[in-house]
Length: 203
Ligand code: FE
Image 1: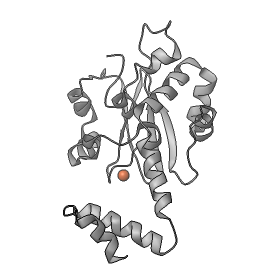
Image 2: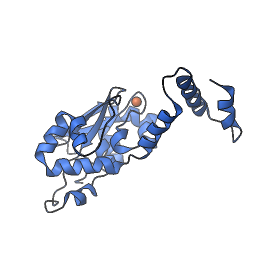
Image 3: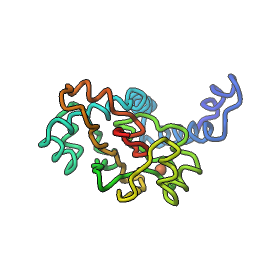
Image 4: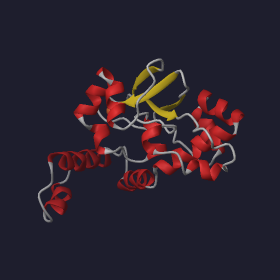
């Protein structure tokens, strides 16, 4: 990497170790001709443009269109493409998992912070915390209780550990009493936390 690249940043204020590392990695990738600064910036812009509203639109479509839901659960990439949401080929596989009355999914990344950013944007800080990463596995019901959701004891909990190759989005149960709502109104009900699985919408 070039010294000037780092100096551009340190004139403002000292960089954190993580920030220094990311600048160094970006400079190395550019030096080796693997990525250009423009490509890095494009990816950052793409991620910054994603929010949980994207995931909520997908959930609302799945609730109102059974055929779409089946395609989404079977092959999320092509189903999302139908909605104009393109997932770049190099992005990890995204599995959409459906919650039911009998089975609840909770998503975590025990190793770091893998997250379905293409549909939810950046993960919340708690998702990246050591406490969540450990307790989501050892005590998922306790974690959910802290988010205000008490699962019935006969509902099975499946904790899904995300990886660099596999991300998960939870398809929450559609709340009762929403039969007359439009897809857009339904999307407004869907929260980020319900798509991670720490809450249920019907409670
Ligand atoms: Fe991770």
